[in-house]
Length: 239
Image (tube, rainbow, N blue to C red):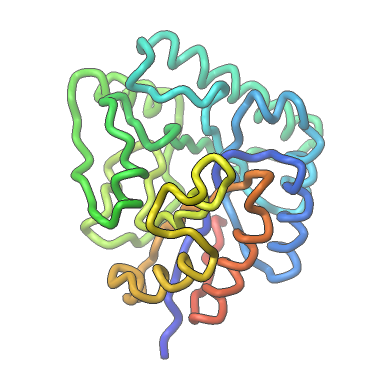
């Protein structure tokens, strides 16, 4: 069976388990792109420095994690830049060149008020739309040198977007204390079965997987990654 190729992306870093997650990935030679929340990084910069030293790539997931649809464009810019300065400073302290500038909107709300990740979690998909506000935000990202690192994606993937999207969300956040029991998937075994049954994951890809670095689902995330390894997924490098 040919390997199913995937880029691993992990949102909401850092937390108390980030160094353990970094070690888990490094031991298995799994590349990953960590999208950091600036407010968390400000409290725990050493965890992100550790991830950088271990070869993980760091992306911007905003400072305050407010949906872009709820913000005025200038407030959104200020929030993004506050996080980006922290990322630049971490790379500078380590004397390591930042490999690229990557951004993922909180909740994948790209300025239009639609929380794309939640729609995918319900098992349906939504078109990536552009309106006046989303176009302004996309142009800002482009002007500031942000890009997507994902290569050789299928034609259906919106590679023209400047922000980093995804093709499959693991739904791991459904198992957090805040969400547990409120969704159809209530256990890690449910989410493993969801992976097995998702038709979109059965092709070679590349797929862009979305997971989370949150305190109360560390073990579940590691279990889902192990399951994907067992299912024949090959995790792609960002170099």
